[in-house]
Length: 302
Image (cartoon, rainbow, N blue to C red; front, side, top):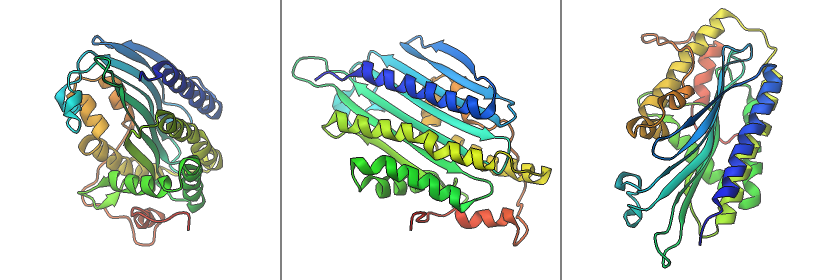
């Protein structure tokens, strides 16, 4: 069985274009484009904005890379696939708004495939992805909306997916050395490869397409709220935790940097400004201190 790679490619590029269109309409300015090629095969298109009035940094990246021989390090759980031709494609994004009342967000959806080498074999695939929210000041209605949108995207494919993928997200986006989650969660999945490719692809499509519904209404509700320099300083402090997670724990960042990936694209996920303070504690009873009570897994849809 050969996989419909062209169909997947069309979906991912269309998803990138749809998200960019919505973000440009919110911000009122155009995103830059940076097309690139990979010497080993494939390439991608990085769409990004820096220094915007609404988005201090926003990046929506598409990549489709290829290789002739799958290395053993990339097939540790399926050693029989080592040496096969492979392809990986997907869309990933990170948005760091200027206004601290708007959360930072991350989303990615991806497909990895290893091609058959003779007639007795089938192509093998994995899907993965998810979306999560990292607020600085928590508005519970925003968190509920975000999680409800994630659930609505997954429920048509099976009621088991939302609780399973929410738990996976809570456990994955966790800073062990800080004993706190990166934000208020969302959904995360990896290695989705049931025998039914169409089922896995449809689920991944709905996860990717849910991003605009999940995030844009939050931006629209919070984008005109006034903020102070002290709130911007707190945002920069909390962005430091985002950097810590991405550089210490995030598998995609680590694999990309260690495997010779495109550094500029990988590090577009970093916030443009971040601060660290020695042993700083928010004043008791302050909105900044209130954030800590949300940095634990909770059932937002009860």
